[in-house]
Image 1 (cartoon, helix red, strand yellow):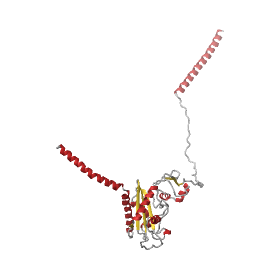
Image 2 (cartoon, one colour):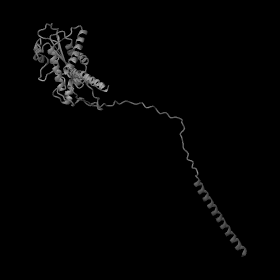
Image 3 (tube, one colour):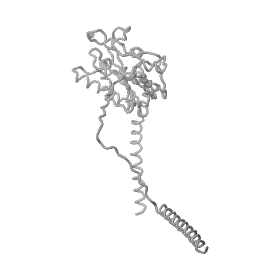
Image 4 (cartoon, helix red, strand yellow):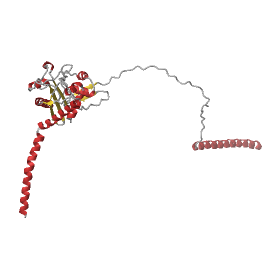
Length: 330
């Protein structure tokens, strides 16, 4: 009986081992593959953008594999340098990277063609956070609600809890589309990031000075927007000649307050007139009080004086009696 139980136990263990190992391998393969995670997040970004388009009566963008590749590559690059930028590692602009990857950008290439890029980065930033932030200004909203552009690609890269988002939207030369009124669609290819991600602002010091310590993913533009100060002031206060700032760098965003001296304005003060009152003046009368010691001294003096008086009269009486006695004898 014992041998049968041992055999059953061994067989059960082997069956569990055979079942669990493949499951663990499959799970580890799915979770450890960054492309799977990026693909899922990229899809969320595209779905959020197309949902916005549908709510505005526009057709959804079509996913383009070339744009998906260059968007992911650019997100990876931004994550590698710890900052957001529209320029590639070789200084290329979005439409130039698309052309190099084989996407035939339509339109006048001297103006950047029919192509636009949005980027965003932030701590624990979701796809919906990124799309919502892109609606904060016209150029980036135009990227998502263009009536000319038709294709889209998205890339997402996560470093720790910090997430980098990129969308590439364009029109290829093989597609037909009417040019919108006003010429080419707005294309933002400046070196400024499209959005800042939850910058924690510093509290002003006692004298009003504000100093910000640069963190990963932040730029002069994003810091100025978070603190509601001018970029030109940041350049001036910190003697900056370019756009490059470093993690840990301390930037002065506001100078200490300078109090403006003010001359006091002379004002006349009306004092109340003083009228004599009939209140009797308070007088103080000093009345000495005899202490026991003083009383004792006074009594001693009186007794001595009495004795002296008695002696004096006794002497006088003695003298008188002596004189009287002498006269009687004679």
